[in-house]
Amino acid sequence: MGKTDKAVMDVLLDRYGRTFAGEAGIRLSDQPKPLYQLLVLATLLSARISAEVAVAAARELFAAGYGTPKGMREASWQDRVDALGRGHYRRYDERTSTMLGKGAELLTDRWKGDLRRLRDEAHGDARRIASLLMEFPGIGPTGADIFLREVQAVWPQVAPHLDQRVLEGAGKVGLPRQERPLAKLAHSNDELARLSAALVRVSRSKKTADEVKAAATR
View (tube, rainbow, N blue to C red):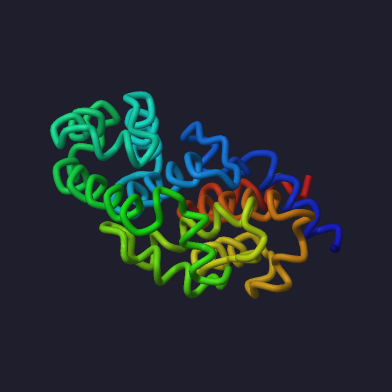
């Protein structure tokens, strides 16, 4: 790693390297509950709504007891709408409440509430995992990418997963725009997930990209 890349990496990870799962209060591990919570978060982040609102809505759902497939299924449609509303997730609240309920049913009925079973069905192949994830209501290619770039911290089978938004952010701060060279800059899969989150934030804001570049040259 060159001095310039290292300086940029240090700034990215220090200032913007918190995963979206971490922001939502998810203690991510290879266990059914946090993996399901990540799926819920990916569903919320998939809508055309700010990441801050999606994270806040996820926190409200989990605080209300809907952080497991069982809890989500047993909540009424209105209960879920109300929790989303408390997180200011109002534009898509009714549709999203329905999707979350159906998604919890699918996960319970097909994979017994455990996304590790989905991963095993896909034999750990990231493309197949993405395909299966897109069977959940509200999860399309964007949602599958969100899930995979966060879960790579605890699912080494899918690492590295650096989608186009991540690579776009890398280009804006002068890091490699190819997956393998960029992945080599991270020292662990956890750091790779944090780097991905930071670069997503950079990709959305020219001001943030300029700030990172300026700080890295000091």
